[in-house]
Length: 119
Image 1 (cartoon, rainbow, N blue to C red):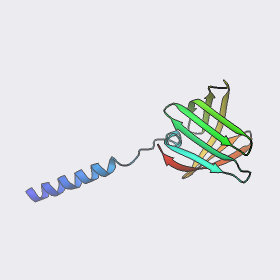
Image 2: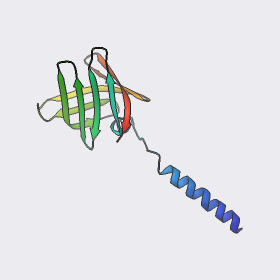
Image 3: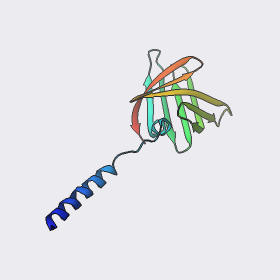
Image 4: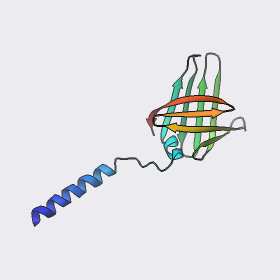
């Protein structure tokens, strides 16, 4: 009897310790905020999308151009809105998640970024 109790205790401890290592993803917006997304494109542009608490940052660096959008971020399961603090403008994007990549779309243009790391 004591052996069964010890075995059950060890199995329960192992399961609980492993489950604490798994990140729980509730919705596409949760997954989007959980990771940094980036891409390099043929025209030489490097793009990074990242999140910190309630802020979002979209950084686009080209040969001679730099676009940096950063500020309060609002997410739904298919839309991303960043209120850029410096310019006072709002930037909205639709998005779709496909495993390790995200497609941002705005005004008919699509930008595909890949998952790079978790925060």
